[in-house]
Length: 412
Ligand SMILES: Cc1ncc(COP(=O)(O)O)c(C=O)c1O
Image (cartoon, rainbow, N blue to C red; front, side):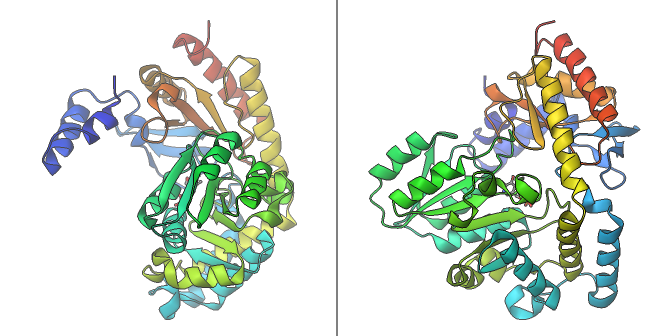
C-alpha cells in the first residue's frame, strides 16, 4: 500500500486532481503523524520549549526535534552580536551579493569559513537548500555525470537534476557499487556528491573511500556536511576530518541552520571554483544575500565553538548516552554516529501512534517517512542538543521504551 503522499502525488490527470485528493484525504482520515507536522513553537528552541498543538492546546515539551544541536540560538554573545549588527546594518541585505548585498561582515564570514575548511575561498548562500541547487546546477551541465548516494538530501538531488547532467544514484554507503558506476561512466566531467552526516539516520559517509575513488576515476568530490560541521569530528570540523581526509575534499558544503542554529549555506574550495560559482550559481546570483545581522550571529557562533569547548563536549556526552541507552533496550538506531538518533519503526501506522503518544507524554519528536525515506523504513527522528540534561534524556529513553513496547515496535 502506497503512503498518502505518494498516492496523491501520482493521482489524476489535471493539475488540481491531486491537490483536491490530498485535501479530502487529510480532512477524512489524516494519518496519525499528521498533527506532528503542524506544531507551532511559541518561543525559540530550548531543551523544554513552549509549543501550541493543532488542537490549540499549549504545552511545554522536551524538545527532541530541533537541528539546533549546540542550541547557540540562545547564547548571550550570539544575541548581542546580532543586536549590535542590527543597529548598524538594519534588518535585510536588500540585494544579491554581487549587487549591493555584500557587507564587510559577509566578507569576514567567507574568510572565516575558508579557514575553517582549510580551503582558499568560500561562498555564502541565503539557505542551505538553495546553495546545493546553485552549486550543482552551476558547476555541472548536460554531458557530465553526478554520482549521488541514494540517501542524499533532496537538495543535492534537485540541484543535480536541474544541472542536466546524468544523475547516477549509488547504493547507500556502498563504495563498491559507486566504483561500478564510475567504471561504467563515459562522461569526462564527473562529480561524486554525498551527505557527510546523513540527515535521516545520522550515519557518516565513508569519506576516505570516496576520496580514493574520486582520485582513481578523476572525479571531483563534494561533501555536504550540513549536520556534521560544528557537531562531528575533532573540534567539530566535520565528517571528512573524522576520516582524516579533510584536505582531499574538493567542495565542502555546509549550512548554518543546524549546529549553529541560524540560517544560510556555504560552499568552500579552490578560489577559481568558488569564484566561478559566484557568477554561475544562480541561487546566489539571483537571490538576496543573507542579512548582515545573521552573518554577525554566525561569526559569533563560530568563535564560541572555538573558545568554549564545553558545547561540543556536552553534545558528544548527550548523544553517546542517549544512543547507548536506547540500544540497550533493543531499539534500532540505524548506526547513527551523530546527534541525529533515529528509532526505526518500519510501519507508518505504528509510527504515527508512537509519535502521538510521545506528544501526550510531553516529548517533541520528528518523523522520517516518504518522501524523505521509504515508508517501509519509516522512523522517529530524534535530535539531541548540547543543552539537554542527562535526566531529561533518561526520561525520554524510558518513555520511548515503554511506548515502543506498547505499539509493538520492540517486543514487550
Ligand atoms: C544534508 C543537507 N543539506 C542541505 C540541507 C538544507 O539546509 P537548510 O535547512 O539550511 O536549507 C539539509 C537540511 O536538512 C541537509 O540535511
